[in-house]
Image (cartoon, rainbow over the protein chains, first blue to last red):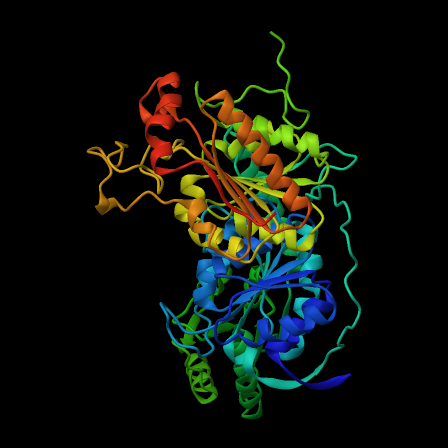
Length: 349
Length: 242
């Protein structure tokens, strides 16, 4: 049924619909509606909710629940996600699937509580230690906040890798119509044997889950194995494009900057400017091949709520074949439609 | 001589130094698990430290956590599988320094888990540096002239945790003499029985030898526990909700 939903609440219903068994989190603005609403909903349907003593504890509780094969999740905002980087690295290192939501706010440091996109590098390029990749979903609407949360567990379990939903305070706090079903059924008790999870070694040999590989050459081999898996994760690639075929300048963005781009693209087209629209729905995997194809005819304007992070991946994709410009606002500022059109127009000269 | 090992301990040689207490504590854990018949229900968490390879030695489901995080990981496991037996095996640096907060809050929530806490008054694996439980005047590789008040005071974990509502059982034992080992054996079994009975958070603290970290021979190390450690870390039950 279609109704007016807030982004942060849509994430909760999406995760529950996706089979969430256990949620662990710590309050931080602008995502407090998630643990609050989650605490009521999870108790209502007999699933696990626990307010942790810190984000550090929360991500490790997620790790514990997830290695039993249960669907576990945490949510936070930028400073809290920084604290979780250790745990995220361990999740990847031990091939343990889980879902993390980052409702980004302004940084660095304590920053502010406005929506921002300053954590792109942290999420896509690492953040924690070691060679690893996360599957990164970037919803662009309240509906997508729900839908991506819903599929995230299946994707995480498919690859035995954490999935991050990288969103921001604007999308978390805004309300708009969305088609969301409120589930009333309880989770199934017990746990099935997935061939790797720890459930107590009943009727089988004991297992261990680890990220420590001390044997000579063992870790090197393990890293090759992980790298191969990260390549296969590219199957999850997703984006939205409009009028890119005849475009002279294509606006590239994701999440809230993608929405602002949509308005700018529509305005520009009304004015007869050949502007295209390209919104990333995943930023790892990144649509490098598609952007490279498009660079044969078009230039790109990367729009972000940061000082320019995603733009580097756009440049890498384009490989210098056409011009890539950046326009963004850091610290919780919002890019302006008028400014986007002005820059796009200038690029056409 | 025939070696009799508990079923839940693997028949494999370990990497512990001569005179180290870990082997004894592994056996005590294995014996208690065998006797309680819970090997197929047990999920253990190995620490960062000398016992990091616990999963090579233990014959039940095991994982390892980031340094200090076992109580949080144990919380996650226990909350979704409340009928499993969840054990963290942690050293003094892991539990009382870097993992102090996770320890405190898991205990305070009364998480129905068992912490086996190995207190050897130093960081064994990284080369014998100061631990939160290092005694005053004790020489370590980071307190070359002995620990002073400026380095902080040795932390009494059982005494601290015994003040918390969620703690069902806290006992300090030692593994330096046969008599002490027998008491330690009973303590491990009791802690696990309390977990089976869903009484809440249980902790057994072992005063354990680290001959290499202490620069003492194995026999001297066992004596050092009696002479020095027990003076500051008295043995006994600090909390028992029965």
